[in-house]
Image (cartoon, rainbow, N blue to C red; front, side):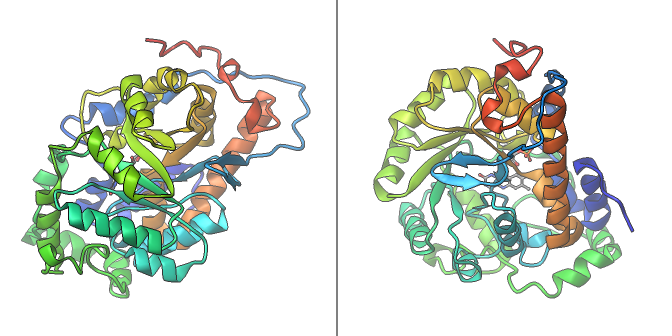
Length: 385
Ligand SMILES: Cc1cc2nc3c(=O)[nH]c(=O)nc-3n(C[C@H](O)[C@H](O)[C@H](O)COP(=O)(O)O)c2cc1C
């Protein structure tokens, strides 16, 4: 039996299970992957402050955001093609999020549809939206999210065009998808993965299959259609347009500086996510953790500030909360865990994070997450510029 003690263990195991093309799609970033690396390494440069002889026996790990009390301060970011890492992966991810009482975000580019997720649960989940060139289609997605009872719309604003990912090009995973002979051999060797994928109910982009402009429901046709739908003409006016259409909570995902955070608030959002798309878009941009404090200061508690990018442990979550995040989200750790063993893998992931949080809080003398602030770090000004 494999023993997983941290997120890196799950990552290594997912590398053994997933076809290389898929693992690289998840694990990689854009261009030279400098931002991807910084997202993780910048966390390490923040020193946690050890405190001793504090009674932390009644520790509480819960956190409330956007009116909902969650049991852990970390949720699941939107991930395209979740159903490729594990059969019906989005349904499995949502079930795990509900078990652990943390938020789950369904991607526009998911394999399971909004309606499938709705059927699988009574509880509301979040839906991530890309504003596509076809505004009528975008509007219909917003309506479907409302009908599916989604409690928040996560509007991703950092993808007006797709950042180039060298690994995907080298692996032939550019749009449209192509599987060459070498890749077929690699896929054949990943028995666990392809055997379990045979039982997947959904095999294509679930939210897009019935669109008039994307009649071909085969994955290749849809992938091509999606690439043609990213819209470089997007502006804050489009965020205001979405705001008018969506009555629930609106979260703007993908701000990396205080000016954009202010624009997001002026456009009517209820929360912002400090994000650089996990280092998959503008390579050379700052890490999210290094951008956080100035954004939180500028936002000045007007709306909650969430962060994703590089969170790999309970210690990282404490660091982000210390620099002003109200809540954390994670992308890749969720995918690694899902790929390793679906529900069991996700249970392992949340157990690891909860244990790390508990131990970290005990060794830092923190009884409740509301006590976490800049004083929990020895060098809170490290990223002051
Ligand atoms: C495989 C993969 C697919 C993703 N798909 C989406 C997506 O469909 N929509 C979106 O807004 N962000 C997407 N993201 C970005 C994540 O939502 C999140 O911002 C990022 O993964 C956070 O960084 P982390 O992986 O270091 O936690 C994706 C990220 C990965 C790794």
